[in-house]
Image (tube, rainbow, N blue to C red; front, side, top):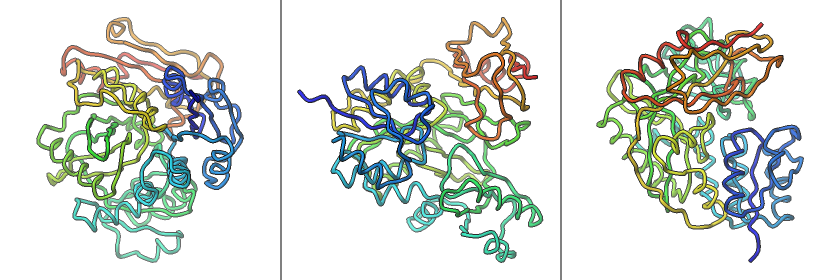
Length: 400
């Protein structure tokens, strides 16, 4: 039997469990991007130096190698390219036009509004001058961000027109297409959610919600610093969001796919779908859900990518209270050590540190500045809340 070939776009460490799952299934794994030193390339069977946003170059390589499937797991810039290759080669995947809608924040907001979803007021712009010309429109406070970036890069909350120009230039810096979107800031009730979901033949079979936490003292306070499962948003809101997410996937004719989904409940009592991307989330979200529920989204996403049957994708209860801490530094400098208090050790399931003594580290401006993760499990929600809300009492990253 011919060995199936899976192409993965990018080379970040979030691909390591994907490569491991593919190898366990007996697939041949190809990674590609133009960063040959990226860690995932050390574990794949072959690496090619090709830009993942160059659709035609990736398509030509995929055709030459006769791949059976392609993924852009946790790598947002490659999602559109993967969908393009899938459609052109007749590989398993979602409709290319639907993926374009999901991956462009301005098109996504327009689609949501057109189909009656709750959506913040928003406008997108191709230049700073164009945005500044619309002086009377802005419903401050607003969020300014690139239309096509991930990892909270280029995102700023703006409270007045005087702050707007700097935020627009900052967002433009991180946009591939040089477009920014400015949208009404939806004040959330409780924590927002960022978690992964899975559909089979367009039907949501596994859906999850998290509690997302932020470090207000970080250089960028809009980069998630911790996650918790199960979420605390309430069953009523979760059910309403599940129905709206299913309606969205049906409208877009989505197929068998893994998704990273961001949602929130506003102070106005309305539920909002903020982002849906047909890929696994960064920050090891699918790995956390495997810990918390036993459902293996990663292996099934790999199977789906090459057209094999997915198995055991079904809703399961959480086996305890789980947290993921995104290790990060409050300062630029040289890493010395990670200190975790001894009384916390019983809760620590996994410690995954990505830096070593003497490494240069940057302050927390985006998800790419993370230094590692901690996986924690708690017997009660009270212990979870007390510890996750007060990390400075038990966790210290020493930088000089």
